[in-house]
Image 1 (spheres, rainbow, N blue to C red):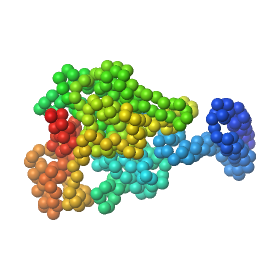
Image 2 (image 1 turned 90 degrees about the vertical axis):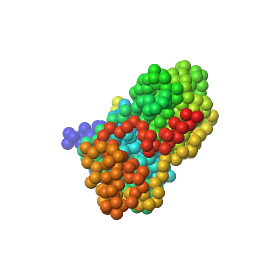
Image 3 (image 1 turned 135 degrees about the horizontal axis):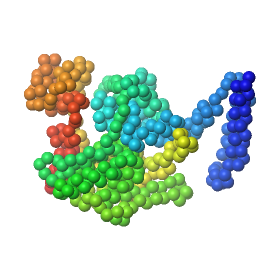
Image 4 (image 1 turned 60 degrees about the vertical axis):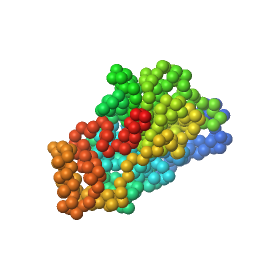
Amino acid sequence: MLKKLKERQVHLLLLAFLAGLFIGINASFLSSAAEPAHKYLDYFHRVYQLIVTEYVDESSPRDMFYGAISGMMNALNDPFSRFLDEKSYEELKEMTTGKFLGVGIEITIRDGQVMVVSPIDDSPAKKAGIMSGDVITKINDKQAKGMKLEKIEKMIRGLPKSSVKLQIKREGFDEPLVFEMERAPVKINSVEYDMIEGGNIGYLRIKNFGSETTRDAAKALKFFNSRGAGRIVIDLRNNPGGLLSSSIEISEFFLDKGKTIVSTRGKEGSGRVQVFKSQNNQLYKHELIVLVNNGTASAAEILSAAVRDNGRGKLLGVTTFGKGSVQKSFNLDDNIGVAITVAKYYTPSGELIHKKGIKPDYIVPSEKLSAADLRNLKIVREKKLVEEFATRDINYTPQTRESFQQQLKKNGVSLSAKTADFVLRDWIYRFKKRPLYDLEFDTQLNEAIRHLGK
């Protein structure tokens, strides 16, 4: 009886709060809201009152309000605007600081399909073979189409050592691919760099834009300057983006003071237009080229466009992903909030790249497999021929390459020598430290070096 009385008191307090909220809602909101909004706010208040006074079973104020907020966000039909409950809020903080638990993929909704923007290096997803552009059709045997992005992300993430199964539709494959992965902490070292052997070209890989990326990129550029790197390759392939502030700060490293980096435009009629210009002198003044692909998105596209439109360098690869919207997180309490798309961004030349992407100066697709190799790779996968051959302690040498090709022939599988070498090498480097760059198989990087050498 006492418990019921306390619950009743809680509901009455909430009703009093709601009444105060709707009566005393601030004048600026009421003046900016469309006239019918008053009516709908009253509906909301009335429905909650009816549930409290009439609903036969116990009800949870928390669940109702969380559900109502989620419903408002979902009604926007924007995959990037969402309610952040306690778990989602914590996950967002973990991602921007560079550590979270899952399989390591950035996903979005495009044309009603769940698309992989990019897998994160050294993550379970990357090691399993998931690629940018893959479409997730099932999660643990449940159809993904029609699900909200927030629900999909929660299904993919989970407890350490637990597993998740993803069914993938991939271009060039008639049958779906199935990947079962064990969830694990994913640490993102967002910047890697070194000199490319045999010349004075530096290689800078930026995997995402997090809280430490600006600092680490500055270290890389100081290293290149100290080593006399007269040219550099900036690799933004499979970079899903991250913090807008970080991409702006890194863009400044390559631009003269006063150059436009990006502009953002908010709600029409709001007057919220921001133009971000370089505030500092260049940190690296020499020639550069930027590698991009269909996994280059958001903040990575900002840096790419800033370099291209200001004439600081060329882009090489294939058209980028095309995420040109800006999200801002608003706290509702210490551990919940909402992420809302507050603006769209425009390149220095005034181009809106949302859902279009950026077309590079030099179109260089990644190497495509032949139809015969695609068919035979399916057999290799089904029979687990690579796993049987390549133990964890095996090394990638000319001898092991030859032995692997012989093993494939014994099993009646014919792969081109280059494809067989790539498959073997990729498997071996799931268990060993992968080289920073790949001059043997990376067509786009080799083309970038060729252009810089002109």
